[in-house]
Length: 272
Image 1 (cartoon, rainbow, N blue to C red):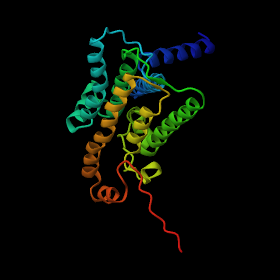
Image 2: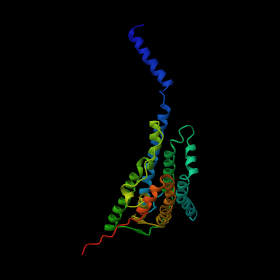
Image 3: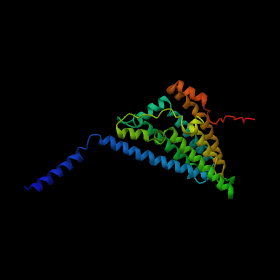
């Protein structure tokens, strides 16, 4: 056998051996990349569904449940998000997230799993809502453009607040990126910069603003906005309890200094 044939045989042997015995850590990397692609695809779909559905006042969704039963299904759709979302943030919920992915990667992927579940919840809500078919008001002319600008600004505020809080956590990237690097997930510190300098809950406030700055108003949009606004005002109380346990006196000092949801601008008296 010639040297050329020997070399070719060796390369073929290495390829077959590599296929049968992938490099160490290949399975972990594959799982990480699969979850990364999954969470970001579902997350993007959920955000686009939210933006589109609320822009039209929840009047162009794909639910087909006959009325009056649609009222019950719509109520279930809007309530399932805050209920499950909040329960998964409790101690028991966090432990459950670690077990939802079988095998040894469940704990590392917990934040990614949480983001996948939340995104699916939002996608189901905004896609399968059954419209009432009633439109109370639709902005036109200059009012339309002004409201669209306000709607876009509310979404930009939400994006900004999410980045200030730690985009890797909010988007679900923390879990799969930690697994990819084979390290333990490390949460960002207590957010105090950016929009968090003015209010303690900018994410919830910005999300509430997206609910009320839409150019089309229907009974559907009002029900959605009212329910989720209550959630945006109440749910952060649970979050702040967790922060008190995690950060102690540091959070208490921040809490005394920074308002909950409405910025407090100091009065500046002009010298007479």
